[in-house]
Image (cartoon, rainbow, N blue to C red; front, side, top):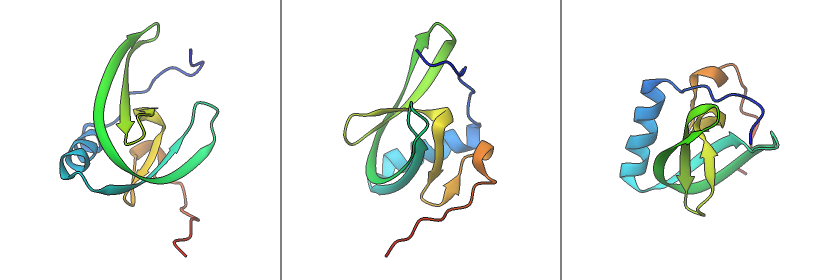
Length: 95
């Protein structure tokens, strides 16, 4: 169980995720794991799902490996930052 309550994401960012899933292309994704490790990967986005948990309805992104990522922990998709993380700076290098 997660100690931090789920925070719903904005509708516009949800729409971006749905559009990216529909395109079925590899995606540059940045997110925080359950241990709050900042992770950057390139993967396919497979699906969006939601589950009822003790804290209420929690939405997840399912990626190509089958891993589920809480939507409120997704930081960046193909260069577009999620609204709560707009102040983050991207220090990754594509070299």
